[in-house]
Amino acid sequence: MNNEDLSTNSNSNEISFIKHLFNWKYYAFLLGVGFLLLFSVMQTGYTTNKIGPILLIMAIIITSNYKANFWKKVLMFFASWILFGVLGISIVFGIESLGLTKSTNQDKNIIINKMIKRANKDLPVMMDNEFKMLKMRFRHKDTISMYMQYVNYSKDKILLEYNNDISKLKNELLQNELKTSCNDNNIKQILSKNITMELVYVDKSNIEIANIFLTDKLCQPYYKDK
Image (tube, rainbow, N blue to C red; front, side, top):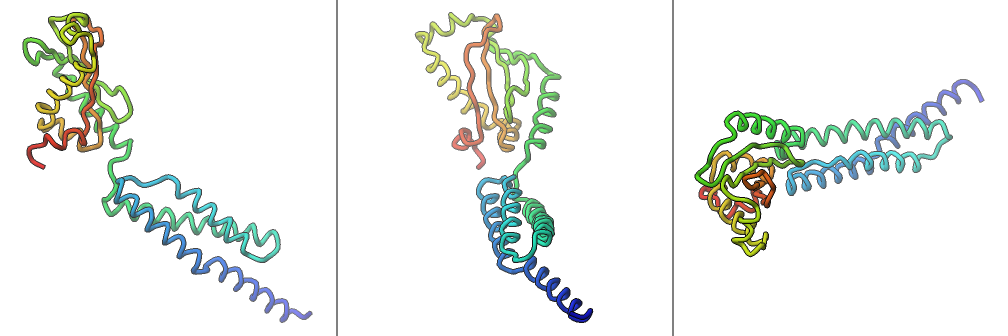
């Protein structure tokens, strides 16, 4: 075999490699994944971190379908994984640039910490003759906890009024807060960020009595301006 034949064979293999790497069938599948991701974001407001394994599987598939020796298969794997990775990242950033995604956990943490720091500057403060707002803190993931104190009563005395049925107490507290707090502009702003408000009630000795949760979903029927 002369040099010209070797050159022709090499060019043929190179074209075969490139053709396989850019086979439209694989990119049609990737486009389908992009549309599914877009649909998921429109439904939930969140992107997914599961696209990485999908791209890895696609790289494995395109490599397994490539008929060549071991080293060319290795080259095909890394070339396809890098190419799919770039396209996958582009799809994710493209969807996020549309403004369809909700706040990330990092964004929420910044919002929560700013609100808590601002609010705690003015606390504790008496709300009325019976309640004092003690403090706010970041107690759970995506949750702001607000501590309310019964300044005149012990836990036993409060529960006695409800026949020691804490569920009755919690239900009454929740209904009162839904009617009064849901239309507070600050509360609405917090809940609109998919942040949950937890109200923790303690007695005059700071013994915890009960806690309730406010969410945007619970407050929806109580919003005056929907």
